[in-house]
Length: 249
Ligand SMILES: Nc1ncnc2c1ncn2[C@@H]1O[C@H](COP(=O)(O)OP(=O)(O)OP(=O)(O)O)[C@@H](O)[C@H]1O
Ligand SMILES: [Mg+2]
Image 1 (spheres, rainbow, N blue to C red):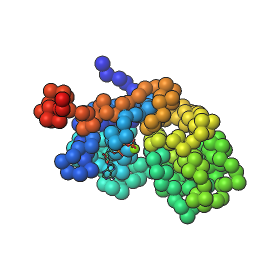
Image 2 (tube, rainbow, N blue to C red):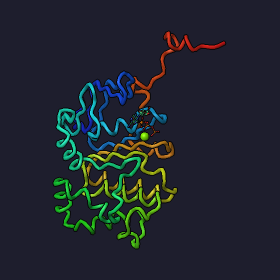
Image 3 (cartoon, rainbow, N blue to C red):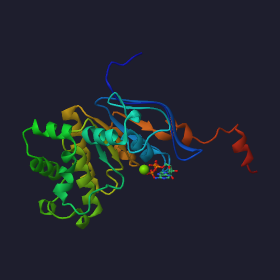
Image 4 (cartoon, rainbow, N blue to C red):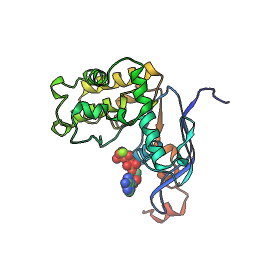
């Protein structure tokens, strides 16, 4: 049966290795529709961060097709991929990637300086960039007194909230979040998820959320279990010669 909803992500027969001959991702197929909130889980090392990097065009597949918002980004030049990501994807990286010499508020508004699409989304909402950054940070319960501090003076949990606000500003079509709540306490985690969902629902945007925290899973529309769809991370079947060779009595 075909589905009439538009595809935000479509992977076909992709393969990726960090080292030649040792595949990390081998995914026959993956589709995510517009507006879906998807929880991605899988054991450590199963390739979750690698998959997100591929979807954001930070790395490129050796084989197969990576379509984001109906564009085959594997055919883009590196510069085109960077511009596409800035315009359409709000990325919350596992390691935050905040700019250390900029203040909190400057980090949050930074994507707008090179993402025309997100800048114009914001302009149509009639808020100033600074006001929108403040609104997002307030919603994430980051103290006002921190807004003009360099991000290096913030705790890890505070930095995570700055990274979240930076990903959400200007309402990108797709939010990709890699372990975004690992450094937050239970209350802030809830405020964070509520903000993320409210922002996505208001704009009909799509969310891909990687986490080890299974208590969050039921809040999402569905889950992707990476080691189930990724043939590179599946253990060999019991009948295979490799597993026989390591069998012990
Ligand atoms: N930059 C890199 N260079 C070389 N190998 C890498 C690199 N990043 C990841 N890998 C390898 O690729 C595999 C998948 O790593 P990845 O970071 O995608 O896993 P993950 O599912 O995100 O794990 P975690 O839950 O611990 O974050 C691992 O075997 C890892 O060693
Ligand atoms: Mg990871």
